[in-house]
Length: 287
Image (cartoon, rainbow, N blue to C red):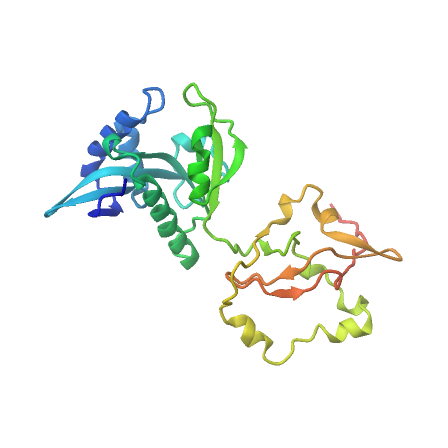
C-alpha cells in the first residue's frame, strides 16, 4: 500500500512531543518504549535531530511518525550515549524510529529514514554541522530494513535494553572524510609525509613534478560515478605494516594507490609501488 499523498516531513515542535510519545508507547513493548521525559529532553537538547512525518490537514498537521536522536562523542552506541547528550559531538545516536500502527506497511518509515539521512548528510557535507555518522541498534529481524536505507551492520551490540539482543548499524554522512583516504581495493593510508623523493630512481623523481593544468583539474568536481571510499590508518590491525611492502634490498614501498583527499574527488595521485618508505634514525629525547 502506498504512503499518503499529503505526507510531509518536518522537525517536531515542543507541543507535538506529547503526540509522538503516544505513537512510541503504542509501537514498542513497555520495556523498550521511551518516556515522555526522555522525549522532551531530546526535543529540547537536539531539536534538529527530531524529525517527524506528518499528514497535512487543511491549515494543520498531524504527526504520524518520527525519528529522534542525541549526540555522542563516541563512534559507537553505548549505554552512556543512550542516556546522555554531548552538544557539538560528531556521532548521531538514533533512539527511536516509529510510525503510527494504523499506517505501518505503507513505506512511511523508509521514506522518513531516507529523508533523515539525506538532510543530515547535506548539512554535514556543507560543513554547517560537525556530524560524521549515524548509529543505531536494531533487532535482527529489522537489519535488512536498515541496510536498504544505506546502513551497515556492525554486528552484535553490547547494549542491553529489553529482552532481545541488539545489533549495531551505522551510516557515514561524510563519504570522503579528510582523515580518510580513498581506495581502489584494497585501501591505503597516508604516506605523503614519509615519501623521500630523493631516494626514488631518477625517472620517478621527475614524475613527481605537477604537470601543467593538473591543479586546475583536481580543483574541479569529478563527474565519475562509483568513486572509491577509504578508511583510516587506525582501522588496519597492524598499522603501517599492512600498507607498506618490501621492495627488495632493504627498502619498502606503498602497497596501494593513494587517492585525492578532496571530498568527492577520488583521483589517483600516487600509484602503488611508486613511493619509497624511509624510516629516520631514532634520536634520544632528553628528559
